[in-house]
Length: 173
Ligand SMILES: [Zn+2]
Image (cartoon, rainbow, N blue to C red; front, side, top):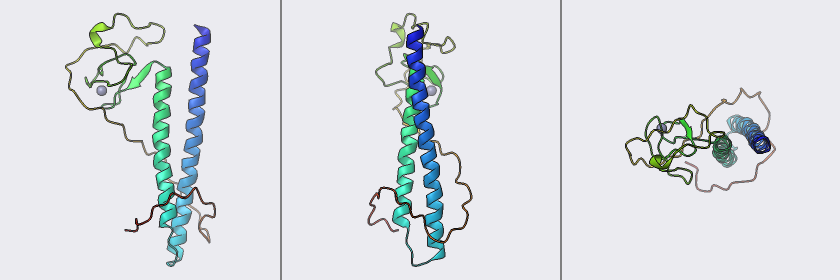
């Protein structure tokens, strides 16, 4: 199915592009946080806590969005990741073939019902193996923190550019 495959590839490319943009934004926020913090360090009368927290919150949200996009990319490939052990499984697996955790999603077909999964969409290496149901609650994988912020060059003032203010009153330790 060449046309179908093209559509898949296009979707994946779009998701990946979106991920790259989000990573770029995250880097920008890390940079700004460094500037804000330094401004605070230089002048004790300056309190940038609110601005710093707003960016931290934005970064956390972006990591969640990236994780979500990664899930969508896997989906296009006919795969899904186990929330417990992070192993990639066939989309139709009801249980993780590695750790046996139950998949609690609409794609999961009870293991004994699966005859032969759509051959073209499912890589053969991911076999369906029913396991003893551990009744494990699905856990949302924590976003992976990568790329520590690079060293920030000294600046006079705090970053001017202010991101949409996420008000966080009453959070000053
Ligand atoms: Zn697993």
